[in-house]
Length: 115
Image: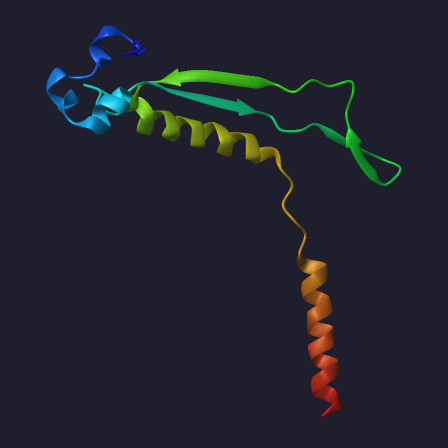
């Protein structure tokens, strides 16, 4: 039987759970405690508009981030991650919908005047 590789000594399979054939085939499913989670993030595909077409930017680099989060810290991590994402969206320009609404009102007014 080949050796199993696990993260840390405390995560090895419990001997009592290895009695069934399924757990013998998949010893990583019967760990004493959950394994840490790796989270990757990037700032997306960098593209610029040239001559009306979107092409990959050559001068800028994509930023890649990775971190290891323990399972019991996962909820707190995502709370902080959401705060960072919301802070980055603060500089975005809101969409101007007033022109669209004016056009719709004109259209409705013209239609009601015809009948």
